[in-house]
Length: 191
Picture 1 (cartoon, one colour):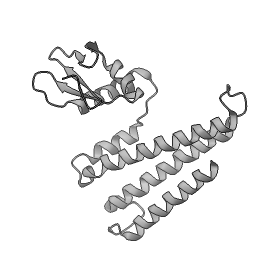
Picture 2 (picture 1 turned 45 degrees about the horizontal axis):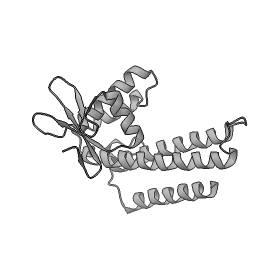
Picture 3 (picture 1 turned 30 degrees about the horizontal axis):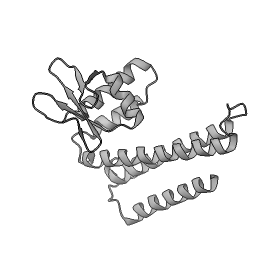
């Protein structure tokens, strides 16, 4: 079966070759990376067992992208933090948090691109881009601060500014919600 409701099936054989059942062609990890960038939905299955191995293949793509470009997206400090969550009680929360954070970042990126297009048009950017780039930098700083605050809320024993462990309460959640509302209001006002 080639597709399941728009989802492309990629078969991985014992010889490490990847076969796109939708196009009946062999593909590489680079081809899969291009498919991801295009937003194509696919699942990778072990050809022999039929097991879903999409996660490990996507992780392999990230590893290859990180090692060959020289421009890494994942700073060492982030990788260390991520590794420290394995086996921790926070391990169940991290995937959902990262997924929502990336979704919010993608939406903010689209809004910023739209604002730049409205400000400068579709012509080559010949004007000074300092202001839009500062907006992006400020957004990254705010996202990083929110991430740290959220991790401290979910991992109260690791919060450095506190002498006693505490539990996250409704007040902390309300503060984060208010920060998100303020951030959304600020983004809306830029549009």
